[in-house]
Length: 133
Image (cartoon, rainbow, N blue to C red):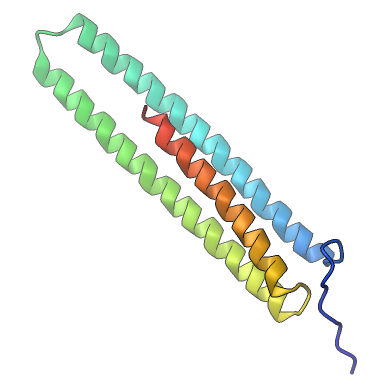
C-alpha cells in the first residue's frame, strides 16, 4: 500500500481542507452578523435609557433599574459570544487535527491557518467590546 505524501506546498492542499476553512469562515460571518445585531440592540437600549434619563431625572430609582438591566444584557451578550467563540475554535481545532491525522497538510501550515482564524475571532471580540461604548 502506498501512503499519500504530506502536502508541503501551500497551494497543494486537498479540497476537504478548503471546504473546512470555508465552513469556518461562514460561521465567522454569522458571528459578525450576530455581533452587529447585538450591537444594534444595545444601541437601542442605550437610546431608551438616555431618553428616560432626559425626561425623568427626578425618578432615579427607575433609571438605576434600567441601567442594571442593560448591564445584565451586556453580561449575557458577552457570555453568548464567548460560547460561540469557543465552539467555533474547538470545532476548527478538531478539523485541523483530523486533516493532520490524514497527513493531508503539514503541521506548520495548519498552525498558520489556526493563527489567522484566532486573530479574526479576536477582532470579533474587540468589536463586541466596542458595542457597549
